[in-house]
Image 1 (cartoon, rainbow, N blue to C red):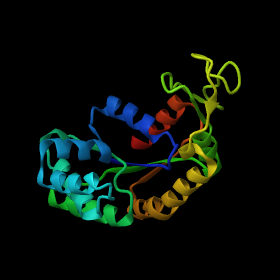
Image 2 (cartoon, helix red, strand yellow; image 1 turned 45 degrees about the vertical axis):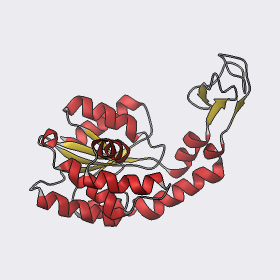
Image 3 (cartoon, rainbow, N blue to C red; image 1 turned 120 degrees about the vertical axis):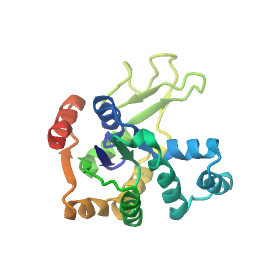
Length: 215
């Protein structure tokens, strides 16, 4: 079973990916993990990626695709895999199709963990962090509240919202997703591969829905 996992930031797809890989015994492939592995192994594409990463620059598509291609050719993926975080753009999705033809395989399912934007905003802006760096405990105003509002249970320090959890930052992340990644939904739908699952509700319920659509 070869799966592409789709969903906006905060959709919970990472949690579902872990549960799916445990159930189906297929490796989860995230771009972060394969970049680190390729750099560590010193593969040709890993070394190219490192050049950009060392400069703090965005790794270009052709290098991202090259690193993914190296990973997909490895024998531990013969029985299947789950791609999480790739493809992110239509260009990457089209490049993935070419890779799959080259290795004589095909994508079986594109699972969309579908969550409305306003729900994503609540989830992503609700995180609070202990200001005491020695503690750093994290909370959430919806899912993991402290006993006393604004105060860390563990050390009594003030809780604050980090800049990257602010509404403006999260709104920009959602805009980038809508522009770059959301078009993949239509792309895979037209191919007959899209499996849409509502991503609101208990984790186990969402997982059961995914398992059902996978048959």
